Image (cartoon, rainbow, N blue to C red; front, side, top):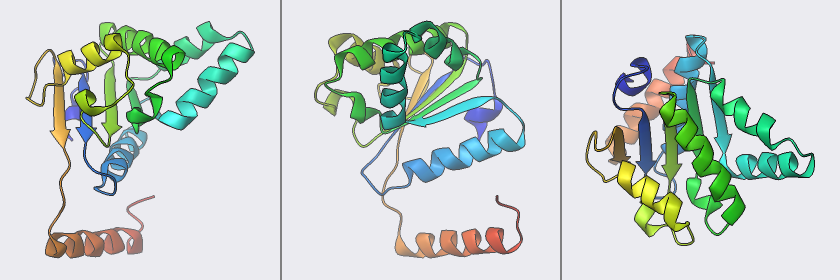
Length: 173
């Protein structure tokens, strides 16, 4: 919550990593919902959608328009970044977009099943950028990396009750 409420502060990138099923997508969905309620402009995409839209932009010769769309948002969420591994051109445009957003002090939130060092097939440039920004320690080079770990069964039950209560009271849309 602190990360999304403090636009323009030194920490403008967040990398969330953890095994499949640990709640990374749920977490960034909650962040996006918070931004939506505040009417803050954001873009939320899966890596698959990012790839499809990039391919469409190439086919229709609209690369510039594709890149500019990301600059309109204060936050850019991309889920399952490991999907772009081994996709050279997609990684190049992704790196360009990330660099532009960082320079404009926009917020970037990435999720992955793996730490950047462990994503096979990432270009050296992108890998260098991710490792430079995500060393697993807070605020290294203006970024923060967090891991999502298994939750105890009692905690899962508490969260499930809270989810039910939110849906029953219609506080969550």
